[in-house]
Length: 110
Length: 111
Image 1 (tube, helix red, strand yellow):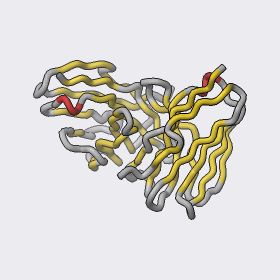
Image 2 (cartoon, chains in turn yellow, red; image 1 turned 180 degrees about the vertical axis):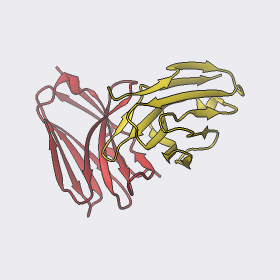
Image 3 (tube, helix red, strand yellow; image 1 turned 60 degrees about the vertical axis):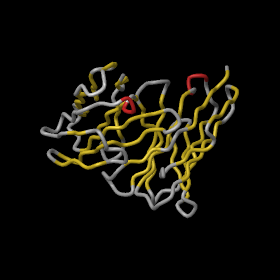
């Protein structure tokens, strides 16, 4: 079954404490991306990756890092989280015709 | 500014009626996609239309694209309560480029 798996689903953390949200896909897709979703703003792309070791900034990359050391994994790293990064995060893995989304990670930074 | 903008922001209809949502964008695109999101969950791909296509159908869904007006519409015919969700359009300028989503249309279908 085609799947994009994100972990954790829910996370509450404190300001400044580094965290990583993992994302894994089993479809051998080259293109993967991260989004955040905030009320009234829709989804905004944070980073995307067109292949292993190739990453590019999306519209809102500040405060985030990513890595793509292998095709199936695309972790999102928050080195020093701040309250304005409280959001719902989605990872997506794409073929040329559609994107498959993970179930989301609800992050709260206090 | 966002590439895609859906209209209306919210739509409430009776079951059995048709629902039409519109999406406008600002620059040239390679393709436009529509997604559905049930409350707080991941997005589900509905349909993709390429810049050289004008209309596509998938079950009860009909999507049109007018590149001269930089707009697209999603029509859901014979709506059902299960169609209640948020609907987003997303555009790509080129293949595997940045994908930009609009803020979405919230559709409520009343049984």
